[in-house]
Length: 367
Image (tube, rainbow, N blue to C red):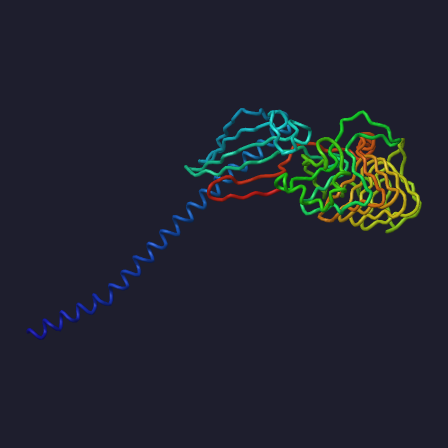
């Protein structure tokens, strides 16, 4: 009987010993699944809070475009199903602060709203800080020379000049207002703007306009270049079929034209024009050119001796601009007006930059 009892005890102990690890593994696995479920639930809640914040951004843009976004006035919207957002806008053009570090308060390139939006879902929050800037399908002239990609570069000019003072095509002073010599679209921090300019000291002195030399500012406009070039192709008065032209004349002060080239373009000889010249590739001017309007290049722009632009030059892509051998780029309100005449403008406010200021996911992006 004793042997039978001891055998039974050993049998039970063996079963228990075999089962305990299995039970422990089941418990541990259950805890792991529970932890993953909790983490997933948090991620879903934060995602819904972010979606609510993005709804607030869309609502703010809609209000800005309909003239109903009131600065310094918070507003709250309940989206239903536990989602809501809280938002407030600041008008940077009228806040009495130098927002871009150029030592000028409330100038035209500060025409934008800064909106902080907090989205909520069941106790979870995500906060976005966004900038709503005027947008246009048609390029304007925020400066004599505009570099609208943070990766763009200005190659040092030998004798080239960039002048933001309003100048008529005959060389007389225009009615104004004046512009910066160079405008750069959102390189992140204004201090980074000068890093884009690979200039010697002599070259920097040749960039004049409002503010100190070199006259540099941030461009407040956001530009949809796909729309710009699509409209250019669709509405062109002249479509340049060849990659090079000699002594060509495209338009006049009385009859400006939209000239479009899909690809690279080289101009030689004595050329002139008025309106808007759009090139999707590389633009190289080797001869003389007097152009009243806006010159737009996507990849690179190289201007040599005898080139005089009255209006503005815009580099849309990450390439470079080279001004050499006496090339001069002047801002001109008359030239800008000539460009505006050749393509209908589309205005409104768009998100030019946004930053996730939530503690859980700091992030900054530009559009």
